[in-house]
Length: 268
Image 1: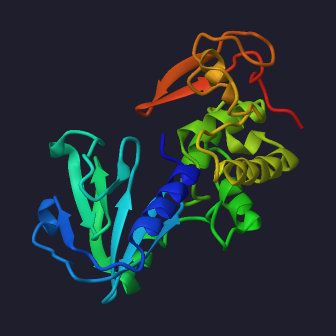
Image 2: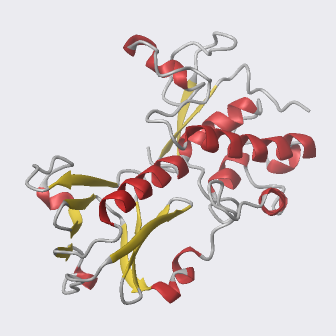
């Protein structure tokens, strides 16, 4: 599932494939920008901002995209078969002489002036993987609404940018708090630790091909692959701490995982 670390890795792949090269093909398959053509313009670079991607082009234009739950960018060599999904799911094609980047199932795709990027991402809180990370501002943002549920506060990109459903579930487990607990019921030291742990987890996974929050290594056998995460995706499996079966609930169209024993209440 795309989260801040995944989006950063995607930006790196796109940048390595496209940056410094002129486009030989440009196709946006969304009605609003279907007639746009940047063929011939050089790609200046690709950057991530939280869970957003910004692909910048010569001439002061930026392609803003967001993966949300199911979106993906794939990079293919010249003549290589595209395998990211059926053709009707393709939303963007950026081609150079050597590589082609194809965007699948992108729910957000817009072309804007580079000088107007803040209109798309200016609402974001401190970026957990960005150069301007500010833990104090992130902490203040989380505490601004004490009655808000912890899970909702962590997922709100206006508070801090880069946390998705996987990290939300894992962070709540590590805090021994259910995602439904009001933020104000967490102690200040625990909330502070929640912010620092979020930073540590995303930093630790920014270069890993497979995400882990438990410290498990990539050498785990296929049968134990789910031990890379404490609770996410482990419904019905024993908690890695107490062996109680992990539970799952649908929450705003997102599956929320938790341990009913370990997360019975926050710790100091």
